[in-house]
Amino acid sequence: MEIKTLEETIVIVAESYSKKFKIPLTRTYIQSKLYEEIGELAQALMVYDELVRPEKRTSREAAKEMVAKELADVIGMAFLTAHLLGVDMEKAFTEKWVSYLPSPEASPSLGSDNRD
Image (cartoon, rainbow, N blue to C red):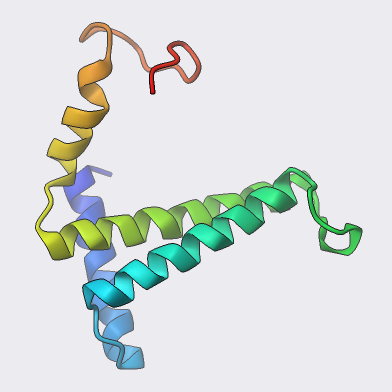
């Protein structure tokens, strides 16, 4: 899915949620939800790393699925923030991340370069 299509999909889903539950999509609301989702991601990562009480532990695959869902929520809230502020995420990613590729032909590989 293209970045712009992803953003448009996230906005449609958020607007539907907003109407259904009568919650306005303000920047303050989205910002608060982003913080909430980051906390839930931290919890999911603790489960994944088995840094929780034994009764909260689950299978590695179930924990990975929890992390995936929370990552999706964090990304969704980040895209909604960008949408509300009129930020072009494709441009932002290109300038912030893609521009650091060592060459246009370079194949992205996690861990191949330790740039901050």
